[in-house]
Length: 394
Image (cartoon, rainbow, N blue to C red; front, side):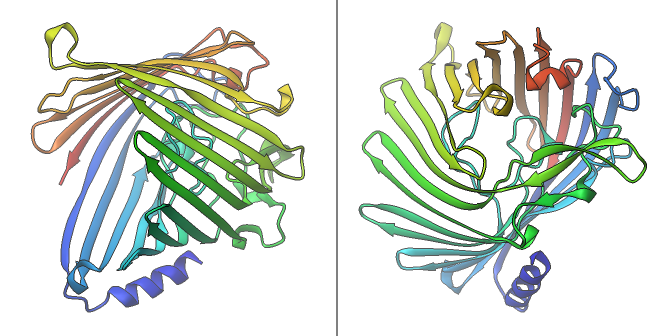
C-alpha cells in the first residue's frame, strides 16, 4: 500500500516546475544508563546518528503543494532501533472550503501534556522515545472541510503500521523481547485493514472543542507470551479492532489553561472509559526577568480492572515549564508521575537550547523511584537514563 502511494505521488510530482525548499537536520545522540539492565544482553550506553531531511514545494498559485519528510536512524548496538521511515509524503490541494491531503502524513489530536488519549491516527515510533511523541507516517486520504459552525476532518486510512520495539540489546524495554515476526491481528485483513475516522472541531471564544470517532485497528498492541524460532521466551504483539469516541476540550481563562481528554473505547473485550484532565497556570516574568513559569497538574483515570489498565490508570502528573524567551529559544520541562494507588514515581526532564544559527542541544532524563512490582513500570525500574543530543539544522 505504501509503495503504491509513493509511486502515484512521484508520478504526480514529476516534471513540476514548483517553488521548492529543502530543510532538515542531522543529529548525534548519546544514551547512558545508571544501572545494568535486567537482561545482561542489554547495553549500558550507546551513541547513534539520525538524519531527517524534508522537501516542500507548491504550484498552481499555491493551491497545490507537496511535502516529503524522511527519517533514518543508524544504531549498531540495538537492531530494533535502527530503522527508516517516511514521516510525510503527501499532495495538498486547496479547493474553496476543502483541504485535501493524499499520501503519508503525521498528525496530532489532543490537548493534555501527560497522556494523549484521543490521538489515535498515527502509530507510535516507540524506539524513538518513551513519551509517545514520535510517530510513524500513516497512509491516508484526508479531507478537512471548513464551515462557519466548525471544521470537519474525514480520514480514510488504507494500511496499518506496526509499532516499533527495541531489540535484544535495547533499553528501555520490557524484560522479554517483542517478536514482531509473529505479529497477530484480529482482522482477517491484517495490516491491510482500512480504518476510518471523523472529527469535529471548533473554537468558541476561549474554548477549543474536539469530538472524534475512530473505527479500525487499535494502535496499542496486546503483548502475548510466546516462543521464538530459537526456543526463547518472547512477547507476541496482537492488534485488535476497536471503535473509539473521543472528546478533547481546552479552555483559556486569564493565566489558566484547563484541559480535558476523554474516551470511550469498544472492543471484543469489555468496553472502558479513560480520561486525563487538569490545568496549566503561567507566571509571567518571574523575578522581574523575561522567564515565564508554567505549572502543570493533570490526573489520569482508567475504568478497566487493575490487570487490564494502561500505564496511566490512577496517576497524578505534576510539572513545570520554563520558557526563557531568549534568542536561543531555551526551554525546560520537568515533571513527575505519581501513582496514587501503588506509590510508584517516574521523573522526567526535557531541556533544549539553540546554539548559534544552526545547532540545537537537547537533554532528556528519566528516573524511576519506588516502583511497585505490580506496576507496569516495574520492567523499567533499573532503566534510569540520560540522553544528550546535538543536532545540526540546514
